[in-house]
Image (cartoon, rainbow, N blue to C red; front, side, top):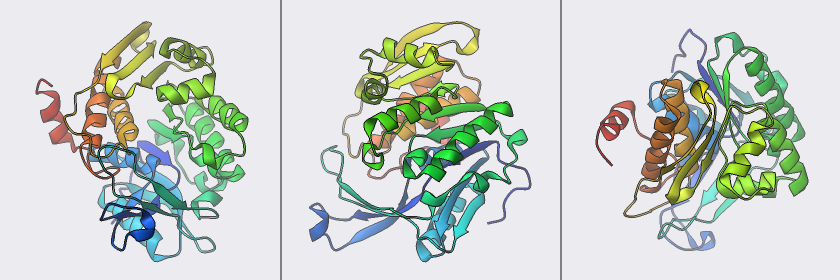
Length: 324
């Protein structure tokens, strides 16, 4: 696919992996048939924003292998600008295998990402990024967990985007197993969150990272360190906002969207992030942003797959105009 001449207005970065999803229930050791897809919290958000019509760039590395080619073709088919997706001839594309989800329970997944191409990302990979054209940068806590060089990239990306005047969103997306210690995870991610405008933790994540219990106290932790708004995911109960977007301090909870049948919860938080970020970039109020986040998060859990429930703009407009 030919890339647009203009630089992306939104940029996301991290690791996209080729994912194999079991076609039948049961432990992975017994499954013989899989469907091939892609996986990655950062790509879920990037794809969701691209489906809503934003010009989204993706910065990463893939191996010089068929899995990397598959990822590039899939992302470009979704409308992502992959000019900053590099091929690493020395390291493979990461893989993930996922059990068949049943009864809304988080399915078991097994990763094969150690030493992957994306784990070798470094600040040099952003050398050609035109930060002056960037409107928004979305970051998560996954890249800095992959390696020291990935951590340097994340720090550099947030700093350069902030200096260029872009807005920044940060979703902790905790992956404790990737860190050497819980203390290192907390210190690193809290430092990155302090550089962001919009911090989007889940309630359990916020409690672990801040040592505070209530949504109000968790929000204050990040507001005291420089964030403009903290938006906390409360699961089926909805979401909580505390911040000063729009020029005045506000504090409220928006109830969740009822879901009759939860099929697969993986990707719900990414859908929520798509809703919040897109609404704020559309100029919507914080309350409207949380409503959209709750809505897209609810769409995500109704289908099997990480990003299959993310809507196109026309569908979203229709859903938002219909009373829930």
